[in-house]
Image (cartoon, rainbow, N blue to C red; front, side, top):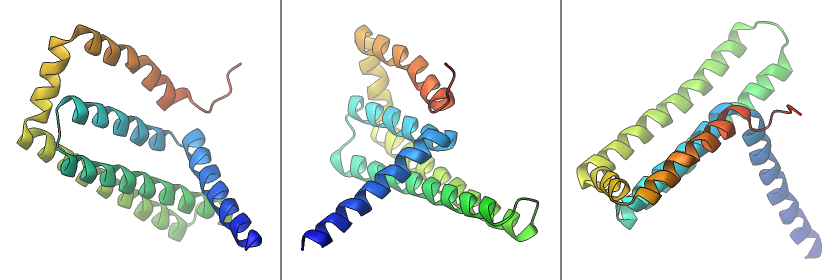
Length: 156
């Protein structure tokens, strides 16, 4: 039993390592994480109902899972060949297309939810009526830009 628990704990550790490695090395993954945070903030401020928020969370998970799989496929393809290979290029293109398709439908779902429910208008109203919330949101942008473009790089 103890051995099985240790193996389970190791598998979670490997999953966390993979997530952190992708976050550290893949700019697009960091874009998806950042977008999920901002969409969550707007969903909260806009009073999006629980069901719609749960669907948004599924969209976040699907988007990030697609990006993780795309990264894994790219890593394997790069390991298999060092030069140009048509089949490898096609595999990478198809994996990237899967990410694009997920992103497109996540944007459509988010747009429908925010526009149809009035949550976007409500979130903007909350921000314009509460200057400290607006200031906090605006102050978060430089940190978000740093995270997306510079996190994981070593510049010291």
